[in-house]
Length: 139
Image (cartoon, rainbow, N blue to C red; front, side):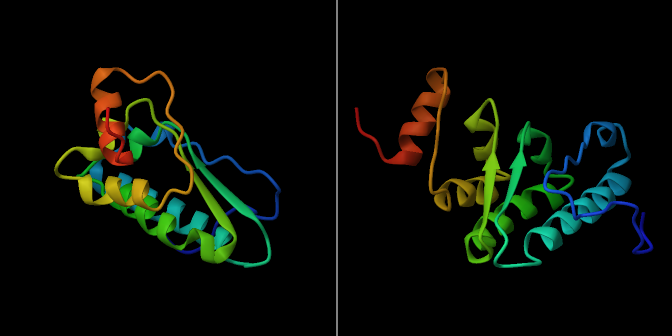
């Protein structure tokens, strides 16, 4: 895992990187795992500017742990660079508020600021108020 070799082949048209088994890992191990996985993802996405590439981060609240900042930093940095490489980033979460907690807001706000499209479904009162603020919508 840490010596530069992998059995993952990035020549497929569709790839899923499942992180569900990483949740029980110690924080220092999880940091390394996230770093390796997300670096692999970024290297694949930015390898060929002529190839269209999409990264979908479903259940993205799992990447919001301030003790393991690799996920947050990846989402922010990828969102800022993706369009230059013919890439797109789709971030899926059930609560927009999760991205705007004070100790991670600098990362979460960057995702909203760099988004071309923002789709909101079934917002509760708190999420709706937050969404309106982000979008600059008045009553």
